[in-house]
Amino acid sequence: MKKVLVICGTGIATSTVIMNKLKEFFAEKQMQVQLDQSKVSDILSVGNDYDLIVSTTIVPPTIKTKVVNAIPLLTGVGKEKVFNDILEALK
Amino acid sequence: MASMFHEDCVLLNIEAYDKYEILSKLSDTLYRRGFVKDTFKQAVIDREEKFPTGLRLLSMGVAIPHTDAVHVNQTSVGVAVLKNPVRFSLMGSQGENVPVSIIFMLAMGDGQKQLEMLTKLIEFFQREEELKKMQRMTSEKEVVTFLENELLKN
Image (cartoon, rainbow over all chains, first blue to last red; front, top):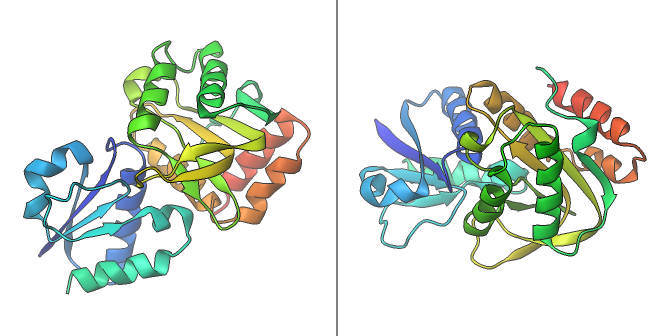
């Protein structure tokens, strides 16, 4: 099962919204995905364990895992591309 | 969903020199009503520096400043509709700015209901024409009623 980490600056607000959107999205696509939520300061210890990171903040370049910028899911501007990028990354 | 919006926490057609000024004024409205602790203001300002919350919609900018629940007494949202846009840093960017016209200051306590409120608010940003109506309103009460109705929609 693929593992996706959702992060934002402090793990409070935007990551919660994105988590919810991704849960719905994966359910719609009938995809089994492990979805975890965290804040960016935790990422150095766990980031490389995931198949994909979905973030609303900047991820340090030392992280090798693919990162998709989730901010379009908040503004609606360009959100289709984000969902496509996520699907691509999980193939 | 109990109302998180209050007339006393709406600053309509307000002028601000910079983001610090408006963050300060908006925090004050929440503090005066007892919704947040005295540590809230500085925490919001600090967090905005580290993890900016400016969002670029199609034709305008909004911001959703917030901080940890530890500074919050009661979940509430402060709203500022600015007369002239103020520069905020763009979420997830390094040094990019966005001129912000409407600010939703989120004072979120712990709990699952926050998710509902936040999700509806974020969804509201995708109805930009509705958002812009706020800029033409003439009373705080009008703003509160409008937001309550908008966020109860599906």
